[in-house]
Amino acid sequence: MKIPYVDISAQYCSIKYEILKEVEDVLASGQVILGEVVNNFEESFAALCHTKYAVGVANGTDALMLSMKALGIGEGDEVLTVPNSFIATASSIVLVGAQPVFVDVGDDFNIDPDKIERAITSKTKAIIPVHLTGRPADLNPILNIANKYGLSVIEDAAQAARAEYEKQRVGSFGATGCFSFHPLKNFNAFGDGGAITTNDIKLYQKLLKLRNHGLRNRDECEFWGYNSRLDAIQAAILNVKLKYLEKWVNRRRKIAFIYQEQLKQLVHVPVDKPFEKAVYHTFIIQADDRDELQKYLAKKGVNTKIHYPIPIHLQNSAMGLGYKKGDFPHVEKQSLRILSIPVYPELSDEQIEYIINSIKAFYAG
Ligand SMILES: *Cc1c(COP(=O)(O)O)cnc(C)c1O
Image (tube, rainbow, N blue to C red; front, side, top):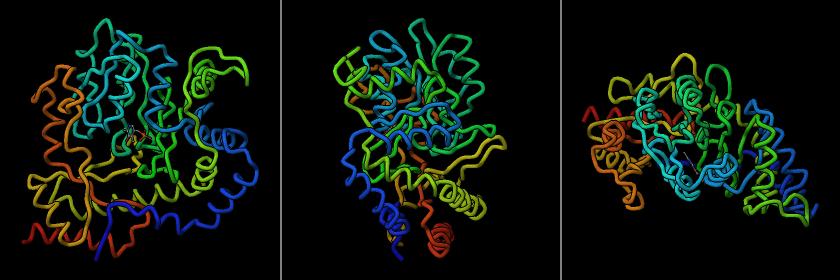
């Protein structure tokens, strides 16, 4: 059996005619930049995230950058985040002119609230918790610390559309929530896309202009802005996929629960806390013999990935930040043990069983 790590075409096949119809309507309308289809998506996505507003942007990285720009974060400011995320969480901070300051993570791969306060300085302006793997970061203590020190919270929810923390959706807790619709995310377009959610009307109005050259209307430019709009064709595709997201999330969670039951004796598996609903963008197991396990699974036809093998503070691009090996022991240790196994909703029951049996065979061998 051959099981790819993700299967984008399988999802497409299941909703092909609906997608093609919506794309055709956009093309026939001639309204391919912003307009009604994008507005409709923004309204639906805000409702999904339990927020008042959503602003469609070009990608998740821009969602983070524009959030910081809108909050006035830039040169001379520090922003706290984690070193085990996708590189864009940190690069977006650098690209607005600010300095990323890393905080180690806990067993759930998310920022450890107990380590936040000691990283705060007089320059700190914001915290970017990442809901890594689709599991909400521990938002209550994070928000309490942010309040105490007057910091903004920007949620990096790129992997976590529809995830819940105490029955409330992620993206609705911080000043803004930042989403990516990259084809490999749990809620995805067929190309790049992103969105920013917020309950703050001032931020909302600023973000609408920031993503569109700072234009107040067709001819008047209020401030220097970006060209970072959600493409209308991608918005049309997302409008279709929104209807299926609950079903897809439930299927991911079901697969995760099967893995948890079947694999917990053999490898370290992630677990749900009672107050959260993770969406399992990735399902990451941890094993001492990770490299051998990955090779064995590849031989069996099961494709796996590592999210992420090189912590951000040890990347070449981060050299100027002054970190060294040993600075974030949890992240560094996890980077040697983590392995992401397929968890996409289109996996068949036979494929799930095959993956489980392959892992069992490795440990029986
Ligand atoms: C993918 C991702 C981003 C960046 O999103 P893009 O749409 O690829 O720009 C940022 N943060 C996290 C955690 C991500 O997984």
